[in-house]
Image (spheres, rainbow, N blue to C red):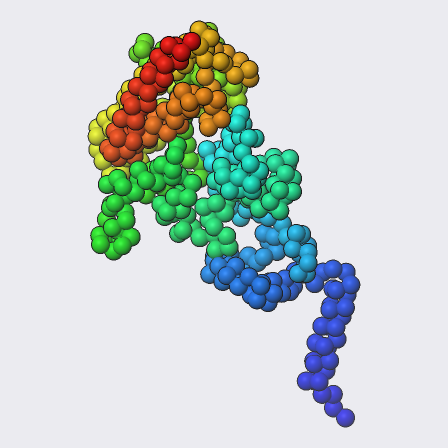
Length: 425
């Protein structure tokens, strides 16, 4: 009697399958072998759009399944809280260069800088930890273990990630993150209308026409990423920083005095011009360039970027004109600050008890206690921002009408309010 080889092979296969099924399940090893299909089967019904996004991603094409980012603890419908939210540390295994670049850039300090603002805690929780206000954009920043625990309690862990702010989950598309619209959600509005300025500048208009196929694909049309994330580098920093203040002081004596006044109103310098409490905070968070070398290095990088389309002479002239706009805006800003500071000193305007010096606090934002101080906040956070940001983004309308003109009007209003307060004593 001859042995039936085919039946023997079947028996071995069935035995092996039963062996691994039994011991795999009993020892908890089944997840790796079936996680991808199990996740797709379930989420294909519960959250089909998530599965569709993942299926069209490079992660899917390279067999990076759900467990790589979310772990293996979430197996049932009622234990979804066990699914891990991927942090930059999760991505570093495959994207180490990008993570290291990101950690050195300004996006990495977004969460810390928001939390450092003195009025941040006065936002409703639904806006801060609920990610419906400042926290919705600033969540891109790195977070401490304490921050993560707080977010896990207040928003079920959503917002602890960073990379998905630009590479939105679950497609994590590089192409999406390269489009200027990827920046639009956060870089728009009151104190940072970069989107409005870029999209209505000649740079933005040409790129929109290119996207709409009006202009050919090889048309030179820069995006936000062309200038700020050159060649895909995630270390995006600017020479002037967000607040457009820096050290060392300029040689121009008037600008030097004006910048010192602004730094005093920011709580970075004390009334004698020496480093105050917030100086170390600004330094630790890298909110401003504090050496000429640091500023010049970033300015040279931007000159190189501009030089890809323009002559070096033209690029240098345009950037220097942006510097000059900051100087002119600082002149108006400092004058307004000194008017309010003088009202404090004269006792005409009551200085808030939590203010350390006889200077208004520009970081009080909309919590400023009086109309004249609120107007000062608008000058700094809105009009001054638009004046110099409009200049650097090559948008004349924003520079003049939304920036410079508004500064002039606000300064006139502050002078008028100061006279009224003095008369009313």
